[in-house]
Length: 171
Image (tube, rainbow, N blue to C red; front, top):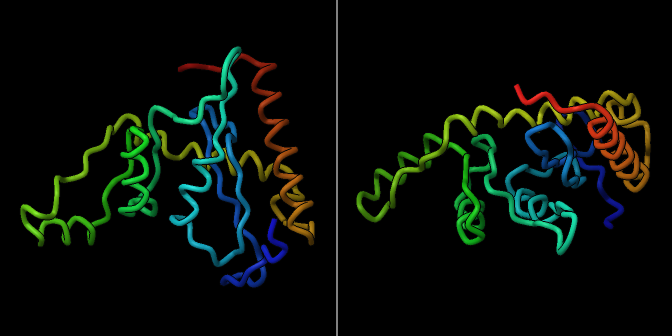
């Protein structure tokens, strides 16, 4: 793991949590980067960390669909999801749509996405808010990235354990 995970951003020296979560706001994969790192380049790295254990056999690594906001609508992210046959639920940015239309028939088809699945894209923000219920994670008291990441994993484990102890409301 890289030791220089504190990076410059508007708030000073900080780090950024990149997270994949399921529809019940449970963390599935975590990645910690320097504060100035953009979200979109981390998309594939976070997606590659997703592992869902089944009762038997290998862990599942390919979700049925991935929902995200417009920050993740890059051509590389869409190509990666298409190659792995994962449904993409990411809207197209206005400038990307304009560039595609400007190319005419060479620009490809318009992006489609399922509006019902897109409504659940905020599950990642809700999962991060659940992670930040722990003051140490919210305020970033840990100076070393290794100990901060360990705290993130510990909090993710407690979220999973608490979700297993109480039934999930499917309404």
